[in-house]
Length: 167
Ligand code: ZN
Image (cartoon, rainbow, N blue to C red; front, side, top):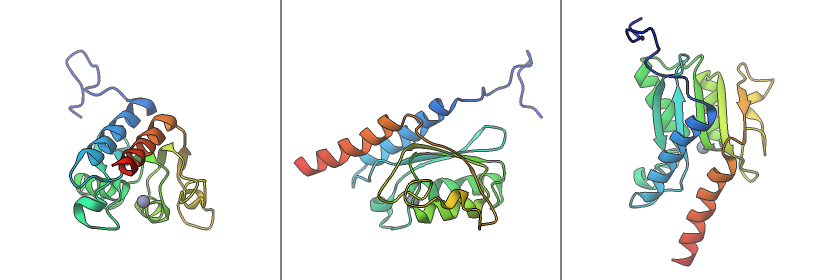
């Protein structure tokens, strides 16, 4: 590996969950700032070594695509970056609890760990409405961490919808 400096220190420090969520939040903000604006949800995928493989924001409006959720776009980009569909050992960090589609894609991609910001009681499939990512009948289950900067991630969504109503 050429992954070290002369002093032996790694070139990238392992980021904390809070810091990783900051990257996902930046993607969420960028989604809302585009024209047409997308609901602010962002996701980041890290390889087994902790290196950022991909980051994406929701692009449902931008791409006119009902499946263009941040998680799906980040998973696809991460797979392209690694040159294989199988993301064993990888971590996905997302500002909002994944929906059923994204939870399904997470299981299919063999992601090891998922870090969630705000929960989504109305549509969440990682502990709220369903728990697909830890469903014992499926052949793969993820390690789940929730509530990382959850308030902040939820406020992004609330502020977005409030601004839209008053427009
Ligand atoms: Zn989704």
